Image 1 (cartoon, rainbow, N blue to C red):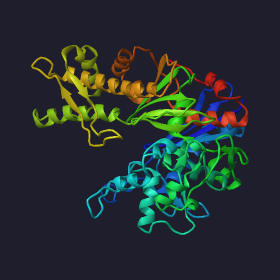
Image 2: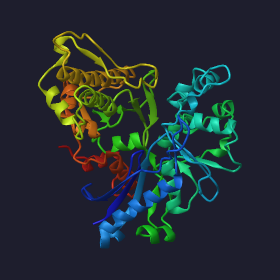
Image 3: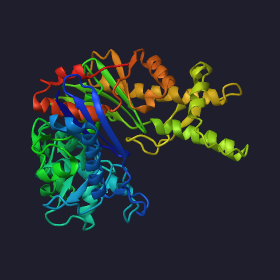
Image 4: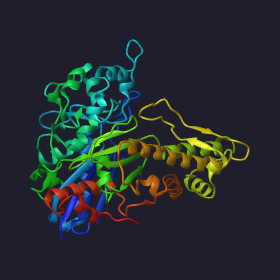
Length: 475
């Protein structure tokens, strides 16, 4: 029996799993909270202790090798993934020179002397063809905006390199130079997704030196092999290959979708993502076109609503209990909300919810709303049900955008993330809205499993993506 290791450097958690190479079963796993965020930074900053993240990742790997015990020498390869868009600057020895600035950072929305947000100024500089080349627009929190801000404010030390956090951890495992797969590099908003090379015209326009960016390599290639020093601290076998990490959206798709040509992925966590595979790029204002491992693209409608929308309504109900009835609820009302919503249908009463509490990537100023309220449907049950129906409707709008790009043959939905797993009412609303069944993967760590799949393909344990479908099982 041999094992593949998968590692996911997420925003809230860091996870490592050991996977049986024959069955795809997760035999051991370890997860730790990512507690590296600095709490003393100015408003709008999202800065994290990069050394702390690296240390947590190494400890997470050690926890898995400890659980494997005598089976640890049977690990044959490591695949990795992690949060996209954010970055950390490092020196030639891979030591951090800056905090890790993640995708939640808002410095791109800061106003200049004329009261214009930085993001608007930069967007006008790049022009209308940036989407066609990069598959996305400039966004605050993306590496493109963050690197420009650092360069403009004296924050780019000479000879520094910008790294995605999972790429940095991979290089530290091997003591190898930084490299980045197109699935991660594309999230910088600076990669020509057709040639998989950095767009030097955009870099020049944003005053970003190309030398600061990592070399673009394929997930098919190795970053290097685990060093003896890392082996001594993590328990890993020295000399095993570490493959170039991939983006977390793509990793989750790999780890949950058995047939990329017929299945649509809806992943609901704090936010929500609707993703479909395509052999070709498309173009729609609400979509990002992301490179897919081993070729092709992922068309992704990202972040309009998700678990945070449901949490906002839960917070409201708790505030009513506290402020009106003087009840300080110590327990979540999440389960009760689902019970109430399960026995009703808000759209039958004319009640419609747009659950965009934090807007969309295209229009961050949009806000949530309810329409069609009357004396009969203004109830906790119908308000809750309408929110879930509104989420399903929003996901369906994302799917419509994907279909407009020429994607065909989708017959089934794969529902991933706790927002779907733990909410059967939302699943029901999605099935009704899409007129398709929702299947839930048996393995909960979809992104980490996807990372392990890349290691299995790299090592020859799996022959290709089609072969990886035997690792995917549904409830």
